[in-house]
Length: 460
Image 1 (tube, helix red, strand yellow):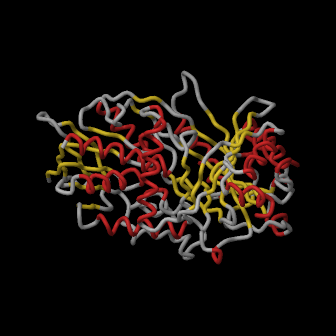
Image 2 (cartoon, one colour):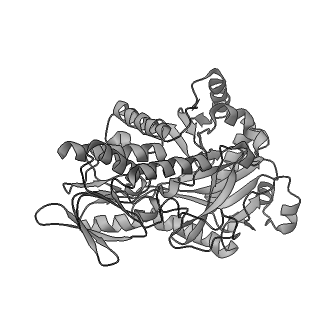
Image 3 (tube, rainbow, N blue to C red):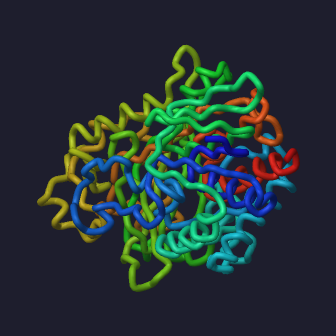
């Protein structure tokens, strides 16, 4: 099989790379390979209500398939260069914002909302001042919430616009990438077949990060390790954060703890949302999402509290460290653990009896337990300190019945050296998205795909 371009991965980065290539150079022969299912066949038994606990489907429809790990997220697009990735290391901020705005315009053409939340309003500036009074720092950004169900619809429309213009192969894992003597690459598939191409775009996503790191080592491409963030997902009554989420929707609050000087941040805030589990390489971790349709909303808000870990020599396996912590949670609870904040502070294990008396009703069926047996003491101290500080701007955060789910792990893929066009040291081989370690969110992932596609289109 011979193609002009082979794209490995149909997550956000890969999809937007393919979309832009087909738009700019419709005559190109493009193949998009994906280990998961197409958008119509992505069905999680938990989400469908068939089972209560993860049964480790292969492939996991939450983490892989058309749209990638972001397909069943609540579809938050952050219009900023402050967070969500490191593309500003490869291009100037003006160009990056133009790419992010372009990705948004494509989303809108396929059904995305035009409503935008912003931190640049009198109400948001008041929140910022209140946060600063307690050494909490509100990151500046515009934010658009697509909603979990609307996000899937947009991706479905995008898939329909592309499916007849290029070749998709789903449930097709890739074995490796081999440079060809005359230029170009051979993409080796695990079924024994292969596909030759002039240009190859690696967009492996989070679920393919370890695989891609192995490919880079095989190709002799140097890697640098990124951090791993560990923490919990907090769930509490939506009214506690209503005065914040009604203004900025997702508040990115960063805090440096007084006890250790570590960085703790809120992440992925889901007003009126649901806590969900996800499968990462066979390990069950926790996440959250929320719907745009009011009829599908809960009475709770959930968000992650994450402690950033950057390791120094000789340790160079942050990914393995995060997986080890997640494995401890799975060992104790058979999946996700949940504990009331009051029980954690008192040093007692939450059980079915204590949970039954809680005023906060969990949106995820999880095993009551003791997070102090899973997370290191330093992490728990940081999380407890952060919750007490958040309680000063959102009274009720530190209530006894506030629920903490664990563990939440945000893996950061190893970063590879790239040019400003996101090309590796091997000509014609590009690396984009979260799996390449250069983005950390939907907006920048899509932008990276557009950037690589335009570079190839210019050469063709």
